[in-house]
Length: 311
Image (tube, rainbow, N blue to C red):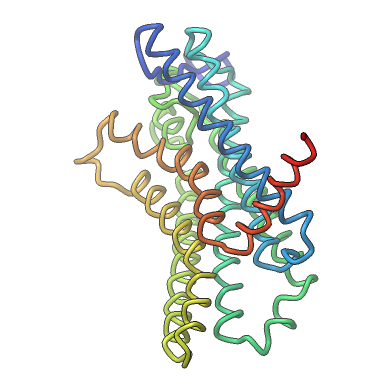
């Protein structure tokens, strides 16, 4: 196999060798996938239908729900189909599409989590300026910048990765296509440009991480200055869901890509990948709906309305 143009498909990782275990994997992923779609659709519907939730925080949460549905839809359905059909292949074009969509969606999600940290910072530390700093035009511009920068980043990474000549087979040791695994298949010394892009992206990711940390340090300091206990609790309750989502997303993603090679193993790599690609989108709706009283109240009304209409 001399280069990438002669390759028709890639071989993905299989979860099990027997048909029964493959079917178990299919049903488990199907349950998680349907739950993620249902939970995020409920959140999106609640935000869209209730005018009380037409605020910057919920506008960004709506975008986050769309990204969660997109990211899990990029990897899980193909893995389910392979288990059901007892195959492990993915077309060359399908693999490129997975890489593009994952980089795009994960990059956009990270950008929105950073924007949401800024939103909470302004709401708690600069409440008198919240209306001017987080107006509708500013929110739309920030959202457009998040989607646009993520799209450009995904185009650059995907193009650089799949223009590389691949000389080391077509087996990807994961249940979906990832850039680091594709780079392992490339010829030696041919991936310097992509490595350079990864370094630049890592620097930007680290800058966003520092911004989130600094924002929450300022938020917690401002909380301690709130005189009433009820006021501190209300401020903390608006930040807790976002902080939990950020912690889960960043910790699993950083461990997946920055863990020392000495502790790396196929089983550990698989578990960590499932955590950030499957578990994280699955628990995000639960975190926001269980800890957010406004959203919980609207969801209860929405579910009750559906039940009454069926009766």
